[in-house]
Image (cartoon, rainbow, N blue to C red; front, side, top):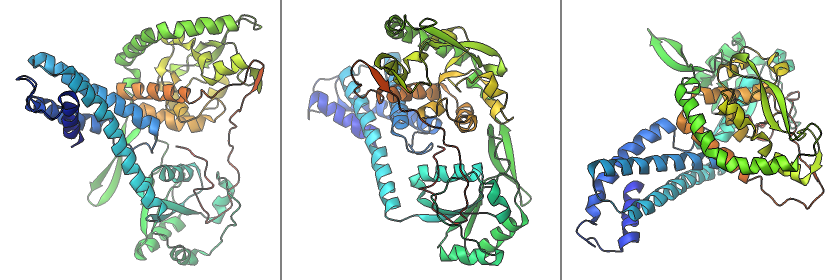
Length: 464
């Protein structure tokens, strides 16, 4: 509907309220454009997940995806117009493209506002998560990031034996200990609508009994399948004679290792170099007096665990105070520009998991080692979500594996635009010449979680 309305508005902006300004500038001549755009948008919407909610509400993500999709539609229209040699006013199409992008963005922002207001008014289901490990933590964070689900995690339920294995932080809410027979009464007292079983290990008999009791009492039951760590698999639920079977289709991150991605990296790097080189030259001149020179290199692990030297500008990332010039280089990630050389050499990609040092890779679990199946990148999904060097490999692996599972040219371009957005947000006024104190993000190590039932929204560190 908006594609049609935007075309009418674009036509009015160009010609006013005149349906026949000239014989070739008739409004009806644009109906093939509208029809083709609707079909193309349907394909893009399905492939690029353009509803705005799939990965959790994130304005930079939505803006970058809508911008790429709108540009793709315009390119398609221009290509079709050229092939059929149909005259179309470029100004009308320009107005139309701008209206499309702005309108789609407003529509999604309005939808998010409506759902968020319903959430804040209390129109939401009350959930309890059964589990106390990393899977339960991530489930709580995912639900908190998706207000369109209209759900609220009100607590956690786990056996007394499992409390010592917890990986949650708590706001000090005291634990509520109940006997097995009293669990259902507690859930009813808390007006719980649904329990989600999110265990890191196969369920104990108590959990199976709890699920059966909840179903009898009208409390819905959902579960996260075990083993959750098979992250690069696409699940499909099969019904084999009434027996549910979860079939896992292994994903091989085809685009992440494809020759087309390598070609995209080389082309984009060549396009970026004319803009990056002047900045790099100025930065190099400012660091000429550094001990060891303006450049440094670090040993990192690339695809398949192969080591390589990653280049960067010589500025101490771990210093708490730096000269203003160096602080600006770090804040805008200009120190990473020499890694464009690693991209051209084929050791890195523009987008992918950030490479880590061999001493850290040595302690990878089998699940984390899947990050090494693709070339590392200068930026990635974990970085645009705020995860950097000081965060744990497990936190970053969840995002990196998610990227590998859904990698595509559009996702790479979207992440590059989101990275540019992130860097622009780091441009507050800096103090004058002298020393600048940098705020370093601290890795949030999980603390002991002791509550059986407690509020999730104020206690969980974000994993999304």
